[in-house]
Length: 326
Image (tube, rainbow, N blue to C red; front, side, top):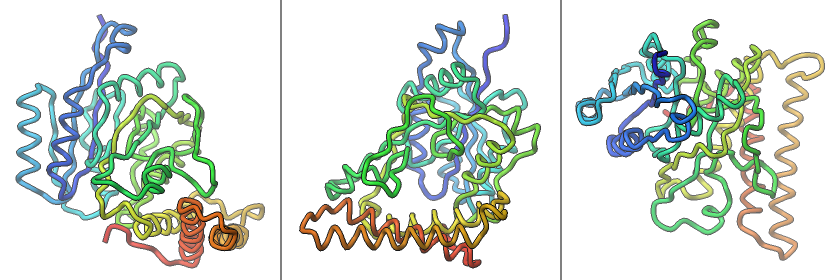
């Protein structure tokens, strides 16, 4: 009989012991009814936690989790500050026999069939990476436009009025570490890691998966693989969303440059011009919402956030590096 499939579940943590406790509780509750019935047995799990703080409490949480569940849990203190270093610490501690690894955030809790659905999507498509969905769980009662606007969900709401609708198993050209399953072999074969230049800005996961895709690896969407993200009240507002969109635009400009997009057909000037267009269109959206008498807070926010993204992109193209995690 072949060995059970080996899957490592990775998470980076920083000053969120209670969030990590909830996350590990969700990992312990994973069930594999469909996958096990198809394969004959459930996968063998191993958890890897990279702590960017070095907390004795977090180490204790990991030790207690391993003792109570029987699931091996590797705790590593990554002293170099920055999300890229913590993510690479996870990659460095993957068990040698791990065929897949999953990343999830320390402020998220997976549904009981989360890994089951990720693995099923991979089996159906043969994809090298599978991106699941993120749904927000707000602390308190946020403004209605925030709760209903899809601004904290994945797939993330873009600049359009309509909410995104990505079909199950649809191909993607990128992913993020907030809910993803990755086949370990191509990552090892190509020596991929998370770029330290993005340690405090964010975006190293976007660059990682865009690079994976550029190497010919397939990425798909798993609509049924769901994690819930805890959204504090301090984040459920336009000011925070503007910071995130500015950061996203800023890192997007840098990632485009890293990916070698500056070609005669897609020059830096052309991409900056497109970003300037985002600023203009965002202003038009804001003015339309204000002046037509058809006030809708979410549409006004879309305009503001489009401006923030465009401004971040232009700043990034001009050499400014926004430090979102400073």
